[in-house]
Length: 76
Image (cartoon, rainbow, N blue to C red; front, side, top):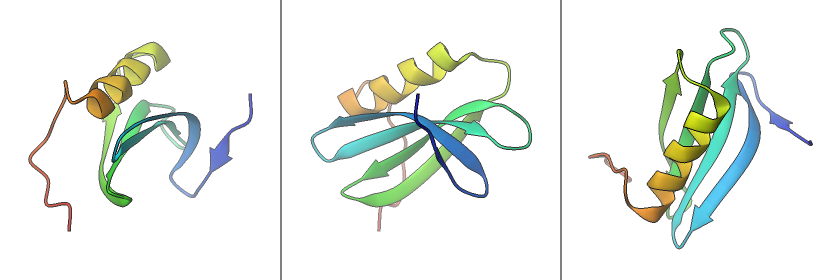
């Protein structure tokens, strides 16, 4: 598995549907799984799930891009 890394997290999976994209990430320090969400190419939220698994984060990412999971975010 190839991963991408930045200072905060490593990207393990990417989900995309239409104008939404979500990376499944693992925090570099805590090891927590989470997702980094984008809409129209703009970064929105990073949400971590400290007590959850990689599969949980994958499901959250998929739910976001499919419109099942949503947040009130200023996507400017």
